[in-house]
Image (cartoon, rainbow, N blue to C red; front, top):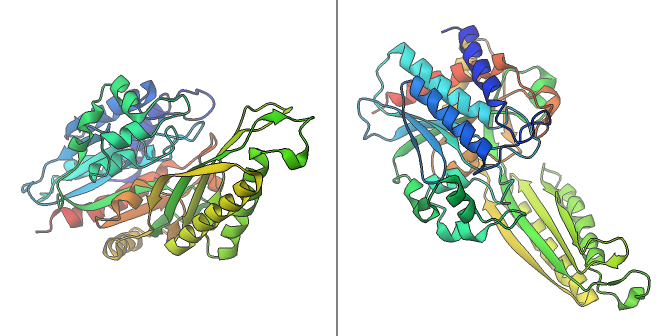
Length: 414
């Protein structure tokens, strides 16, 4: 199979998927449990069937295709990524990896080579966490880490819980634990993904071999004060939630910079209530996203945030909550699988580079318990999570070829 033939199919499928967005002309918005998600899942299921796979949609909204091996009792080789997006995001983040997984299944089927193990392609639901502020919903459910209480707990900005959104979508949240796979049934997990950063593009490198994914902690912070008149309330008699929150927010980025090892911290959402220009805010809500290869760094910044909130809310006579949305520790990816793909890169004369992932992926959740590997392909100018996100289809085709060769190695092990 030539790269040009793979390229044509990958391009066709990704171009078709671009239409499944709630913001046509303004990037991809494909949030979980929406009409656009349903359209994408139905299309992906069709592609899987065309590739000769048995297809199911599980209780978490994951779309799963299985290419049967001669001994399906052996732990499978699984490959995939997510089909959801951020708001006004790009057309390649996540979904390109799902299409690559389906293409690997096609290539395996076309070669006709015997497979002892099942090959499973999966499109995961809600990796981004954009709608409910969480993340890794589908991959977490597959590992048995989601239950009905979890689904009730988290809500979107309209007050709709995951639980209610699933029911509206046609799923039964009471059966979410049916999505869990039996321990030991997944032998290896593979994921192809766009880099979402500038390194490969800037250095003109075709393949990124990902050796580590950073850990992530996410929080929703709510600071409570008192609403008062902006003109008649003296500064020393205010319970200004914005004043207290901003003093904490202003320090968070500097605490990450102090680590000097790639640790990052982001406040990406801030909301004041009542939100009037001439009203002292009674409440401020803001998010915090902390990432690092060193989990101690993440924990230290989270501790500093709590200490600062204690200090600032006490000084103004208010209070706060710091609700945990997500905690995932850093993961080192499989050295054995990385070496196999390095040899494939050499054989095909593809330029490659080892690098870490500063973004979280389904591989971060799955890699906690299952041998996992990732391949990155270049993102033009490093842009991602925005409408101008772009990756060459030829680079995705190369990734699919490399991962097919890895899958063939893994599928025929006893």
